[in-house]
Length: 622
Image 1 (cartoon, rainbow, N blue to C red):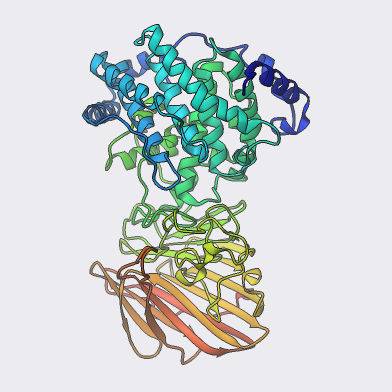
Image 2 (cartoon, rainbow, N blue to C red; image 1 turned 90 degrees about the vertical axis):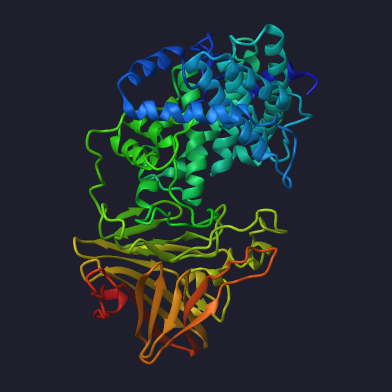
């Protein structure tokens, strides 16, 4: 990069003439006009002074905003007492340092801008200078570089008038050296893999870089012209993943990471350039706020698929405010306000603040079918009952980023308890954790393979690592609902056809899981469910699950004479140990031909009632 200006000039020409870089395949964003509408004043990123003044005026009478500002000031005070950031990797990653810097800068920067107290600006400046003195921002794991570019860019912009000219130059030089230049290298040639990714790396890397570039755009326009053009051309590849109706294939945990950075990037474009080049209009993004709402069970736990955290619960997601503002949807904002009744707000909640509605609305439908690359269906018996019945099912493909071998997996809540659960991710630093090809090392780890999930097992084997599954029927009524998923591709070594049906039955008071197989050769067939509950095996295919003083009755309705068994899900280090977790299973050692396994899962309700049986029909007649 000895001739940066020459490189940028060449890249600019390539951008202008290469049709593959066109936004939504319509028009190229020409670098020469990217900064035509640049607001040359500071601060111009995320929260301009005029918007800050509007918030301060609203703050005089808005009790929710008053509370959220108190939360921000409390966090800023806590950050003021922490030692300076140091360059310390965990495995190959510096990411925890980049994120800590980002959190500190938002909290301290907003606290200074809100109160005018110099202590906050001084501490923010110390943190910025500390990371700017690092030898690098770990570009080998580029998320680290992108998030640090974001943090330093916002810090430079928000504290611009606090810094003297020498400090500005130090920060600007480090941002260029450690962030923007490595970013431009990533955009060169065919582009680094994250420039073509359909998943979270795309939003994080592109948005982090464009925020850093826009922070210094009036004095170093050559960086902003190239990076913004490249980022705007790359982002649709990931943003289209929300289509057609807001789901995220990497699961709810990564939904938050990806959507938060979508909000950061598009907000920066809007505040600095007064336009987002049409990115916010990409199909599916306007409905993205429905995904965390519907995939959160009555327990507060997400329908937990892909490399989501263990027992991943619905926590604050400030991007829900951004979605509410951008798409004029009060449901998204009110859902977030409800979460903030239990947790502290973040600075971004203030940046994207939207007042709560007088009466918080619930979604109209009890059930939802999210289409897309990894389709998800969720059913529930009620919205306003923490003990309601809830079940979610996923399809999709096993090679999705962060995916597990779990096609057809289900999770179930009732009585305020998660009965059927997903164990979540394991340690990302395990050898071969990212080797997800067929027979890759990723699949030897218990949490990632099929043996830990609530899916059928044939001869104890993993599902086909390259398999895809799709929903073939979805029906919802007031008193019942069901979905059918074609799992044939996942089990093609042994079966000609495999179909799973999951239904809410008997007035939404029980869940039926019914699997049908057409086996091409004899094998051991196992139905399995992972649970934290204590399990008592009874006669006649009945098991009683007990957890937190509540009970769920599991009953094998088919085949006749089948019984439950219990096994441990515990593993040895270095894998996560899953202490106390069990597997409720039905094992058919010599299965062959056409057969059905049907299991009824019925809570013991407060009134002492339990659903003991339902009429079984072939899945084709559901």
